Length: 323
Image (cartoon, rainbow, N blue to C red):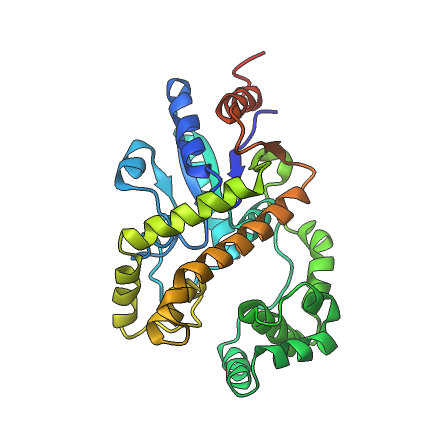
């Protein structure tokens, strides 16, 4: 069976964009390809430097979808992504091209390929109550509260992981069920999601470096480049709008959260670089953990000398371009 689309996933700074552009160039003589971004930060307009958004030259070289589609004030959900991505896939296929799903937001891949469970959506009132409690008691205290409500989720969260602690408590207060119960039921729930594409239709390359230091160095270099190219000015412009707050999903993106804290004075500006790099490393670690849990993936050594050759061979085999 010829694939419906091809997917390229991997941790941040692992080389996904460069590989996707090379694959698209390789497919130019077979009708071409278009890239569908699978990234929860690239959807936001005005957030270019801190998200390492593809350059104007890269965007011109290959048609990209689901980039710059939302104002940072407006959240974008995994369910919306799944719907929009399926629309893009159908449109790209209708024009005789190959859809390339490229990114590192694993919840988006899950929503598209497995379907979503019936986990409750966000409730601004409940969320604001939790934020108020955190300001009064501190996040470690709310983490201790979560240990009583949902010990399984609390076990995998750091006491200072405000975003995930808040969401876990919010889910419990809305539904009366622990967040972990929704994750346990996700496979059963997804079986009812007839719209989910399924892994068999979307083969996935997973870029996984063999040397952790290789990835750490690339993360550090990327963050340094962002700072050198005006990331703080970008963050200042976003804050000066006056309608954005620190608890919006856009402003909780890695790097943006730390820059916001530095500009408001809650952390020293001298700590921004180290905190941003550390948070990005933690994100990469979570991404790799998720990817390595997938038996369906095709892992490639991101720091290996033959990664491009291996990827192009994989693409040709899945698109039946070689016997």
